[in-house]
Image (cartoon, rainbow, N blue to C red):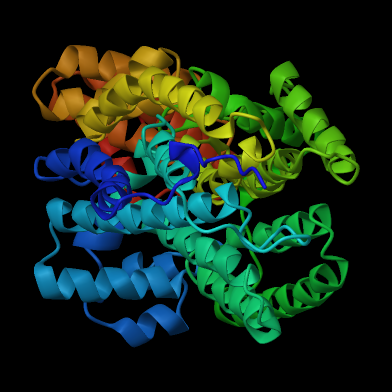
Length: 516
């Protein structure tokens, strides 16, 4: 009987080649994200949560108080992320609370996630665990190369640096890692592992970041796509129970979530932000900076985002009849992305900001399924390699530039200002930095421009506090007239709201020549 000789793609990789393919994604992570960590500064929330934590070393407090209440003594809304905060405490107390320490922590966790993506990509490229009709093929050069390139393609995308480069966003990195482990557990042929594994992974991920709850619907959807109906029902029940238990515990710690920014949450805006997020991996619009202020009623729906959502829906239904097994992996990748992006759009409305760091977890969790997209093609490995290499060449330079911007408040917000010159958050931040650096006139001009058109959400900018801070800075700079204008606005708004104006404000008002 004639047998076709296996191609090099179908042959097992030589040990040295296998080791090189496993290490290549880690080398890329180290090359892009490692060196900048040694020159980084704290940025934004890093100062309060990591450096100036009010209770350093108090790990128990991380589990009994909301995250911001424990760190800053202020109400932090719904935020309670005790597992990540515990890691912060242990690492900070052991190695020191420096930007380099926490940046290297993020780089290390991201490297682990990339290794997991490589492993899952290799598994999906050879049919591991999801396909019912045949057992998984052994690892071949083609499957391992596909997993390797998928992992590299993930880590060089410009969306990734916003999570890895911000010390205070270890939440997303840890949650994504646990969810990848949950996917791996769901592939097990052992019933208990395939049920308990995803449940444990989701629970740990929820203790890192609440938006991980979307994983429950995403994983159930994947199991349905591949025909595991009974397992989908059982896993869905387990994950729903886990989410309920966490929700009860979470509510016991933080109580009801109260935030004035919830007024921004309207259905048309959600669709606009959600469809915008769906297209970001393909287009990286101007909004993909540190934070884009959401304007209620003015968030346009992305045509490309709608197309991606519709294609995901069509792929979902087509997968059941498709003879191309790779189609089911395509449907899974799109479906996971569409579902897991949704909490990011809700957060964008709730906090009045749209930020690319919200997309790290959805992207990492959806990405491994791309490796299975070429299964069933005549030349799957070659096609996959060409597409992924092209993707890497397009995005890698922008990722390098982006991680370079995550060095300090100054570099980050200057980059934001170049992307969005009218962004009030960037204007305010850069204005403050210029004043502190002695460039008083341009700093006050930029700061004042932000006060003229503040974001809709008070969560993103406390306009009253900014007016007060501006008045102090202007007075110190010898410009009492500018200070008086902002103080007059501050006092008028306080009185209109029925709040008593503090004596210190009245004394400042007298210093700038105002009549009490």
